[in-house]
Image 1 (cartoon, rainbow, N blue to C red):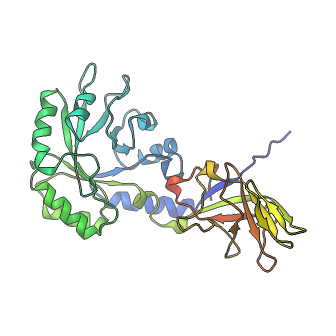
Image 2: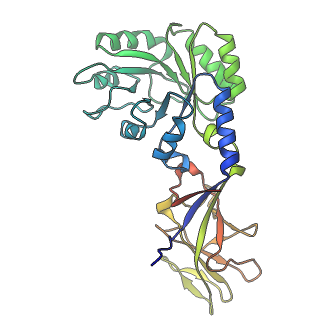
Image 3: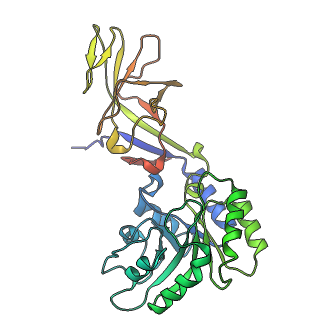
Length: 322
């Protein structure tokens, strides 16, 4: 007896176009460190790590708990500091340290460990001020840690020019022998940085701009599981939202478990036939309910609707390569 897969939330990828763009960008960026963290940018972290392994000899992950998804012969840079790394953390995982507490926690029970010193940027997140880098590097050495470089992570709200200026200001305090790992620069700005400081070794971490370079290659959609007409004015849903006679209730097979929630402005993330479908109430777990007025196109059971959500926070059921 054949078993038919029950698909609800699907990411459809234009395979040829996506692979072409990813490979082309990787070929243009000297010192590329692909970022493979969180939900794997919608593709799944384990799968994306295998794909990243075709682009570079190292990759960056979010936490020490994501290291196991990186192929064992590849270097894993851990972006988030930890105060308690796993005892069995493999030797080629390079930890980020932004304070002496992070450095002390990074000391392995046996063997050696390499670390990256995090410079505190204008984000004001973890990290040591640029003028304190040399002192933290010295403390790392005293603890027996190898320092593989420094990391500078400017905020997203700044322009690339502002991020470039911040990085250039920070490195004035950093010994040129230390490789520098940077984020949130476009290719042209990164090339300018390298050309302006040829005495340094540069590495560019790329995540969203590498994997989501052109969103036209990616389509997020969900199945319509049920549709029925409201016969009389009344209420529906978990919380008794009002509905009017003649409206269609559309039941969609994805919800908060998938990371599908209203947009930041409260609007619905669902579209059908170029119309935004109004939510009856916020998505719940595995199901969302939309209400469609009589004068608006309405999907049928088995149709799909477009879903407007960032892939970095969405857990898809199926990735379909076409």
